Every structure is written in C-alpha cells, then in structure tokens.
Length: 339
Ligand code: NAD
Ligand code: UD1
Image 1: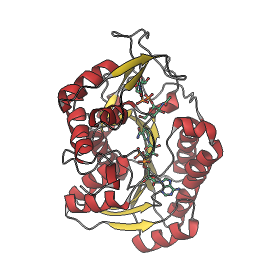
Image 2: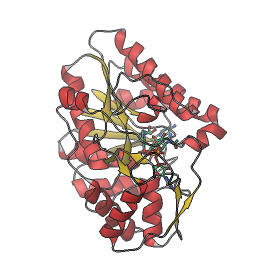
Image 3: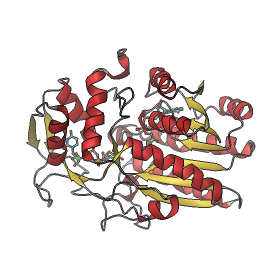
C-alpha cells in the first residue's frame, strides 16, 4: 500500500516506518523536523534497506501538502505529526490547537481532494483524563485535563465526522497508553531535545550519567509500593499496532477508537529496578511531592484491539528497558552525535 506518514521522523513514527518498510509498503514521510532529526530517517533507511521518500513540510502548509498528495497519490495516511508536551500545551495552548487541530484539518482537506479515504491517527490515553474505572475501555467518558489532551479529543471528533460523510471512508483512532523502548538494534529511539518530562527517558538519562538522580513524584499513592502505576507499551508493539490498523482500515469502513496498551500496570519503583537490572547501572532517586495532574494508576482494557485488529502486546518490561538502554548507551546525545 502507498502510505503517507506525517511526523514519521519522530519517536513513534520512525519505529513504525521500519515495520511498514519491512511489510513492503511504499512509504513517504512528511515532516518539518520541528521535534526530530533527518538522521532518524537515514537510520531507518539503512536498517530496512528499502527506499523511503521524504518531503520536508508543515502539515499546516496546504500548498505543499497538495503537491505531495498529487505526486505520491497515497492510499492511506498515518498521522503522527503534532506537538505532544502536556506542560508546554498549558503555556502555549494556541500553538497546540494550531498544529494539532488546524494542521489535521489541512491534512483531511488534502485527503478529500485527492480521494484518499483511510487514516490512522495518533491519539492518546490522555483523552480519558482521570479514570473513573480501570482498566479503561474505549467507552470511558472523555475528560482531558490539558490543552494537549483537548486537542487530541477535538481531532478525534473531527475525524469521526469526516469519516461519517462517506461510506467508503475508514479511520482508526489509536489511543496510546505510555509508549517506551526502542528498536532492538539500538540505532533509533526517543530523543528528547529538552529535559525529559516522561519517566523512561529520564531514567535512561540518569543511567547514562546525563542527569544525577530521578525525582520520584510521590510515594503515597494508593498503589502497592505507593508510586504511580502506568501501562507502558513497547514502541515496537505499538508500531505493529499501526500496521494492523492499516489492514483493518482497508477492510472496514467507519471510525473506531482503539486502546493500545498491555493491559497491565507498572510502578515507578518497579521501572527503576527493571532499568537497573537491564543496564547494570544504579539509578539514584529521591522521593519528592506528587506532580500536579498525576493520577495513581492508569491501565488499558485491550479487548477491542485484540477483537478488531487481532493485535496484542508481546513485549514486557525487561525488553522495554533493555532496548532503551541499547539506544541510550550507544547514543548518549541522541541523534546529535553520530554513533
Ligand atoms: P515526536 O515529537 O517524536 O514526533 C512528532 C513528529 O511530528 C516530529 O517528527 C515532528 O518534527 C513532527 N511535526 C510536529 N509538528 C509538525 C508540523 N506542523 N508539520 C509537520 N511535522 C510536524 O512525537 P512521538 O512521541 O513520536 O508522538 C507521535 C504522535 O503520537 C504525536 O501526535 C503524539 O501526540 C502522539 N502520542 C505520543 C505519545 C508519547 O508518549 N510519545 C503518547 C500518546 C500519543
Ligand atoms: C504523560 C502525559 C500524557 C502522555 C504520556 C505519554 C501528563 C499529565 N500526562 O503521562 O498526556 O500521553 O505522558 O507517555 O503529563 N514520574 C516520576 N518522575 C519523573 C517522571 C515521571 O516519578 O521524572 C512518574 C509520574 O508521576 C507517573 C509515571 O512516572 O507516575 C509516568 O509518568 P510519565 O512518563 O510522565 O507519563 P504520564 O504521566 O502517564
């Protein structure tokens, strides 16, 4: 299938590209590199040994998008491009609505103009807000607590309406839980340009010596060890979920939201212990007060992904830590240094 991948140079995009190329899809990446490096695409190309078309462009640039659609004639789009920091979205809400919401409108217009009627969209478990019940299924009410989360919810609604206008259109809204890990090669991985907000990249930077210690945000939650629990999903499993979603979209018109997680949750201290085992390095940490907006526990109900996509996570905590360490130790400064 000819697949246009927006934001394909980013963390999840680059891992998905590898899966797509290995599954013999024809792929074009459309990215403005605002939060990624062209080096990631060079490495994907060398790992897959397959051609990878690239266009440097902004999803809000309708002229460039339309030119790209006219030339490549994609049969489907996987839409990763967007801004993703919760904290930053509180400080700069309009940028988030502009890129995430207005950018998606331009993309859907270009798709409509060029007869492309299949999309897989990167949504997030953040659309659920604080869960009323666990594990969280797709019918759980949506109550996002940040501009970032609200931009994801708005895009979901827009895509749902767009898909409803024509009976041949298909859309899959993948709600990722907590993506972590890296390709087993250690050649591509998550490369935060700033101080990481998320647990796994922070732990990896402590292990490699870039940061002195981890702040554990609260040890007084009603969980087994008192620290926050999350449903971490290996990025390779997540990449496979995108391929399964593409296949599903090709045979099933309509719009479906689908959770992508493992269905189990892991605490901060369990993650720290697993990373120490995987890396053989100590992870010094200090317990500090809770982070505003955090919840005690989050966990996906993954029955729908199994039922509709025939997909389930295969990789556990050990592989998540081992692959992150392989990437971080070989590339302590991410893509900014040549390995
Ligand atoms: P990322 O920042 O690594 O990748 C996003 C990519 O989009 C980057 O390559 C960036 O350069 C590109 N981009 C941003 N704005 C653009 C624009 N205006 N035009 C063209 N390209 C643009 O992020 P990621 O972690 O790979 O996340 C991918 C998607 O998944 C995002 O939409 C994110 O919101 C969503 N998501 C991520 C997580 C997570 O924890 N990483 C969780 C849930 C959902
Ligand atoms: C965060 C985002 C969510 C996004 C997800 C992507 C918030 C409120 N939510 O979720 O929208 O989809 O990332 O993966 O920001 N922790 C520490 N020390 C740290 C960092 C984190 O103890 O330095 C703890 C947190 O308190 C939490 C767990 O680690 O219990 C996971 O945190 P994080 O990786 O930031 O993910 P989420 O908060 O689940």
